[in-house]
Length: 260
Image (cartoon, rainbow, N blue to C red; front, side, top):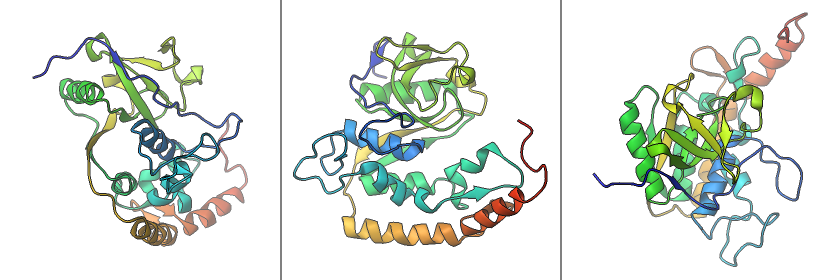
């Protein structure tokens, strides 16, 4: 096993965050934003953002966030479980294939990937994260601060006891009691293996041949139609267009909303 330093922070990994003004697109959905930042960090010239920086002449996707909104299916996604459930925004519920949005994103980007689910051996998880950082590849984590939404792990400290990175939710102190920050702004997440919702993450694999852009766009449009027209997922969750009807019907109920 290769030896790694006790601390390693990848420099200049783009920050992901809720839109707070400025010239860029309002990036308010974590996973597509994380994919945009990842491609930017890996210097993939086909991906860019014409609103934030000058794109290179080879760039064929001048708004990477919008691209990943489309290929994942998020553009046509809505899910509704009876009641005001906090996980109605979870993109894994858009079909009965929870990994589908992630698989479609990485296939469109031309990269392999490995999903590491919750409940695994913390030592193996630590080794996978440390090895990925050592290879210069940030890790997509669901957590480890705030709710289990996509974040970017960009480094580690104390031999992996502390994870460093960017999260949409690191500015919400009520969600992250005791979470410190690096001088450069990244969160410092200690005790990540005990993350209450269950810590899961994705490591980026080797680059592979990317499908032709025309094929990706056609496939993505067909996928968005399928997502919108799938009325139920996971047995009891209204989905797509049916979720709008369920949501509207719930609004009509007196005192149906949450007490807070």
